[in-house]
Amino acid sequence: MPAEFDFVDWLGRQQPTSPHVAVGVGDDLAVLRWDAGDLLLVGADQVLDGVHFDSAVHPPRLIGRKVMNRNLSDCAAMGCLPAAAVCTAALPKGTGLDYAKQLHLGMRDAADAFDCPIVGGDTASWSPSTGGRLHLSVTILARSAGIEPVLRGGARPGDGIYVTGPLGGSILGRHLTFTPRVREGRVLAKSSRVTAMIDLSDGLSRDLRHICQRSGVGALILGEQVPLHDDVRRLPPDSRSLLEHALHDGEDHELLLTAPAGLDQLADVPLWPVGMITQGPELLLKAGGKTLPLPARGWEHPL
Ligand SMILES: [Mg+2]
Image (cartoon, rainbow, N blue to C red; front, side, top):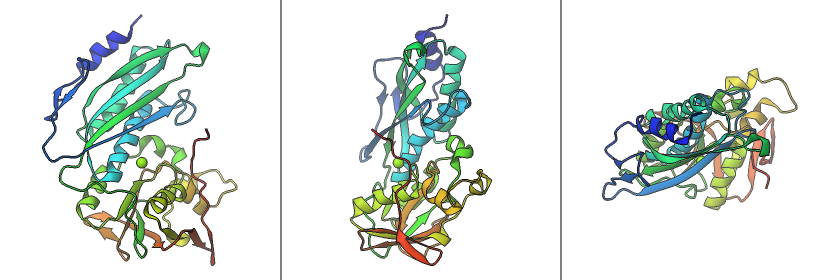
């Protein structure tokens, strides 16, 4: 039966080279080179079987891709460049070496697209009979590389609110296959005109709240301007309107940002204006001729 160290040996042969990696997989810690003046940004994100994916339905390569892309999307939200990642996997016993390799190759599909080497991590297994399910976690390290990271707290009354693409219906598959907006986030940050930014993981209604709370402002969303993804129209009909799906579904992983009002693009990044920042503190939605409080119905993990 293959075991952890067969997988680790295979991993050690998978490493692309990077000018930032002095020692990669194979020692107790990886060793990175860091340019003087670069800020180090660090974050972590995980995916759980039955919450973020369904291992009975979704192929391992897409599960691996998703966990890495969630982390890369956070780099995009700060306008920073991915530099390296470390990953942990808790595998149900009996998963098998081929499945573990597919998880890793999915992570590599995502990371290689942004020259982000996977430099270490840990693999363990646990018994499904005692509840052990597939769990993946990634810690990402990123470089500021000559910009000021864009924070959530800089939105000002009068700023426009923008998204980088249409929203809603990600459950049809985009939550596994999205491309993180690393390039766009970088270009936007370099423009120095973005006052706050976040990636849309929990849904516009909830992620906008994060910007408003950190910035001490309110917001008015113009429902007719919110771009609907084609997936919204392909969803089986339910009690929610198309706009509600776009506002609350989450896992779009487009960028939500604030910047001077009246833009339709910034540098070469197309932007969809969806509203404006107000003195606040309330978040409002104008739709169908009415202006009402914008409920925060996006995803939140119950504790
Ligand atoms: Mg985020």
